[in-house]
Length: 59
Image: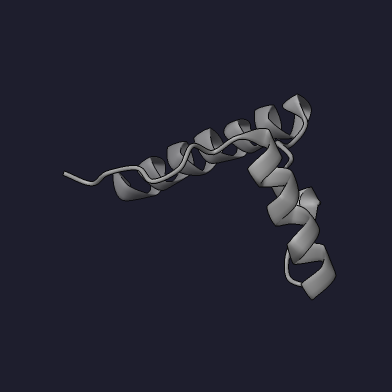
């Protein structure tokens, strides 16, 4: 069983982001969740492509 040596807190995330910015590696934009509108649009695109794939498969 894997043991946790730390708890992921907001302070740890903020400090990691600060360090990453200073090193030029991490951008905090990657830690943000996409807007609900984008999530919905992506779900719709996924469903449409899945349906299109199934339609082609059964032709």
